[in-house]
Amino acid sequence: MCVRRLMGLWTMSIGLVLCGTVAPVWAADGGRAVCRGDSNCDNVVSWRDIDFFVAAMNNNEWLWQQQFLPGEPTCSFSNNDVNEDGTVDWRDIDPLVALMNTSCPELPNMVLVPAGEFEMGDPWSEGDTDELPVHTVYLSTYYIDAHEVTNQQYADGLNWAWAQGGLITVTSGVVYQAGSGTSYLYCETTTSSSYSRITWDGSTFDVVAGKEEHPMVEVSWCGAVAFCNWRSAMEGRTPCYDLETWTCNFEVDGYRLPTEAEWEKAAGWDPALRRHFRFGEHTDGCGYNCLDGQRANYGSSGDPFETGDYPWTTPVGFYNGELHHKVDFGWPGSQTSYQTQDAQSYYGCYDMSGNVWEWCNDWYLSSYYNSSPYDNPQGPASGSYRVLRGGSRLSTPLGCRSARRSYYSPGHHNDRGGFRCAVGTP
Image (cartoon, rainbow, N blue to C red; front, side, top):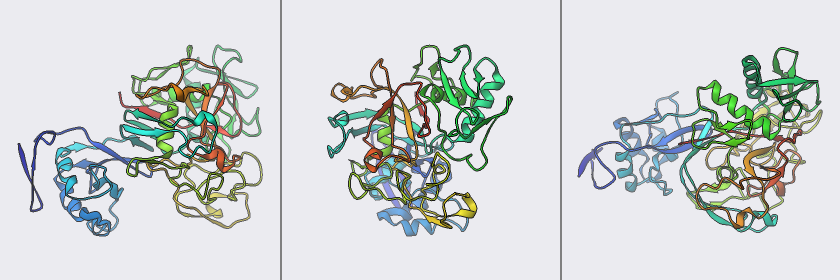
């Protein structure tokens, strides 16, 4: 038995709540992964969190905010809901005690999705038959990018790969896997496609000015997984993919594409309410074919990038609740300003509805949900097409639903397709 004193409150903790430490529980807030129990937002769960936690009791977010000095960084109020039951109260004390003296390491610009069940599929039966039946899936803890991979990130990866030698070749402006001839296309550049925003001068890759923070497009599934390997190697992680067999090792710490199940949970699931939201910005819209143009870039959404040269993408994370100004973004539309709504998913991912379709790791099978395993499904063992999710800037709202499934051959690429990365926690 371990007895602790919390601001005049005594709690006797038995069983899992020991005098030692346990692994942290995680939350996500706008792309920042932090652990629950870190009430004072300093990335460590310690005695310093107690005053902040007590102030937050009974869901008192205002009093919690008053504990911070002017200019001090804050994080999500949900960090105080340590047991994740939707309420900050005495039931969170024992879990908080159990987390004492744990640190909160994080991966920049990624959010962490805690382990647990969710209901996968279309609960409204509004989509295609391949979205049914709705079935319960358990996923282990994983990270996923808060934003789609940008043009600048991909160009940085290309430059790293080019510098290594023997990884990529460029033929007529098209980037291929080295040694494959033209069998494995990775991406296009502006030399080969007017839709690409990646430039190539014969020695260096760069990005068209002003498009650095827009999502990468004209990238194949092969080019997406190659980038995952480059990113892993650049950060000292073990690459997941064998680029000869195109298989993924889920047991290492490198970057990879999310599985279809991981993508859908990060987009549409709310564990506090235990329900599936229709769209990937934590709303149901105003129906299956009605989405708010202040929350997502989809066909005829009215955003200020919806004119001029294709592709009509918006910068990643554009729909963050801020009033944006043309002078800052240089968009081609006539609007001098554009008000957005904060359109992150429950876990903190942006652009999960619209902007670009996103490659997933899985092979596609229309009937897969009839036989999908409960525990960490990874898709069929083989196939002809890879899964894409999320819809694009040309999709109808129906196509941007978080349960919507699409697919293309692994070598396919266009101005509407991109991706984001995930990392498992082996």
